[in-house]
Figure 1 (cartoon, rainbow, N blue to C red):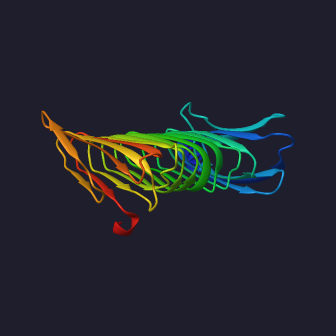
Figure 2 (cartoon, rainbow, N blue to C red; figure 1 turned 45 degrees about the vertical axis):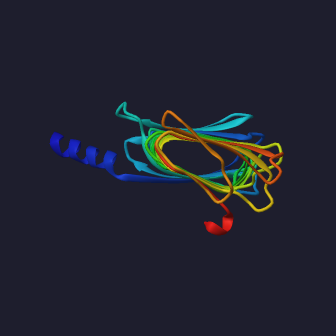
Length: 285
């Protein structure tokens, strides 16, 4: 009898559980989520309510705490280990979002109040967001699409893709490529140790653009009508430009300083230790 009871109890704890709850957020303007294992998907709507849908193991409890300023969602495990769940959250569009995870994939779309996202093992995807966008993943790819504000993204073992962003950009990774397209920014900083960098976007008057990789290729697309001063440095890679360049070489290092247009405009600095630097027109993409 005892054995049968324990078996039934274990089965109940392991069985998937589901919840679906909708509630008024009152004056809250921020959501904080801690989900150590699983996934978090956030969408928005024009309502002062939040909907929480969750699928989780029977040994995990989803705790929702509400205050006058914020909603907090945490997962607790009856066994003393971090809880695990697949969360689907719908929040007011103006909310600010904070999410922390360990083995957690994060997908956020349509948030106007800014996001702060951090995970160890998991991809991060942000779309149609506005505000201060801060995110980091050690073992996961970071993707940002059709957003605006101030972007800061850090990775370690995967790349970062930014497609359509209006605002200044600072991105860095250790082992991975950095791809930027449709960028509208006054300042861009992109740095990787082992990976390729590609930039296609504005090169604005008085803007500053810094692209740096240790082992990888750098490709810069220069819009028609750009006025810029360009500084390029590479140790073991060629400088290949569609624009006239005067090279100088010293102790295995190639340097180039040249103007595009009048030269009185954007400042561009490109560094690659062990890869080529290619400067192209958009039509050559």
